[in-house]
Every structure is written in structure tokens, then in C-alpha cells.
Image (cartoon, rainbow, N blue to C red; front, side, top):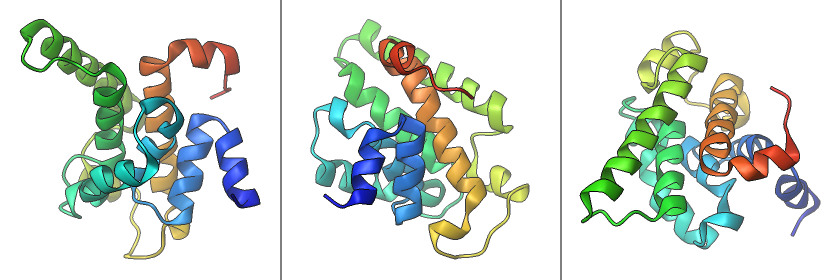
Length: 158
């Protein structure tokens, strides 16, 4: 493990997600990788599962990949029985709550709408500081909603 990667593991969930993004992972991957140690899924699988959601789902600029990453983390953290209506409804309610929190902090959950006010070209992630911030916001929300006991221990200033 490199010194940089060790620093990522030691940082807050938001810092971890932002570091993964800067390293070159897409927005969805960066969010889920920030929780790899608590989701019960190996990093390679998380990378593969989240890969199609970058750039608003394959660069379609639809739902922000960071939001998709939050939702992937929610499914893995909560492990709902999707054949049970109450379990599925609880997951969907949690996702709506997370999406609303992201929308309140950023103005939208849609990639193209977020990029209108934060334009960037097709460049390396290190050149996308606004997207990096969105990834950090998504990781912070996921931490608040999925692992509140962890957040209480670390209490990260906003």
C-alpha cells in the first residue's frame, strides 16, 4: 500500500472519496470505494459494479454518478430483501432522503444540470475540482445516513 493510499484509508469518508476521484476513479466508484472497508465487498467488485455509473451513467449526464454511488452503498449497507415490500420501500425511502439531501446541498441530482454551473472538459479527474467536491458531498451524506454511529465518533466539520 502506497503512502497516498494509506492516507486515503485514514481520512474521513469524504476525504477518501475525493482522493479516489483524484486518483482517476469515476464519481460512483469513488463514493463506494470510500466505504469498501464496511460494505462487505472487495474493492475490485465495487470498482466493476460502480464503473458504468460514472459521468451520469456512461457519460449520458443523467443521474450524477456520485448519487448513484450513494445508492449502491445504501443497497450494500442495508442488504434489503427486495422481495419483501416493506424492506424495498424502506430502501427507496432512504434513497429519496439521500437524494433530497444531495439536491439541497448542490441544487440537483442530475449530472448535466450540475455541470451547467460547474463546466469542465473531458480532462483527468484532477482537473475537475467541482466534481471532486460533489463526490465528497455524496460520501458525507452516505456516511450521515448509512453509518451515523461512525460519524458521531469522527465528527467531521462541514
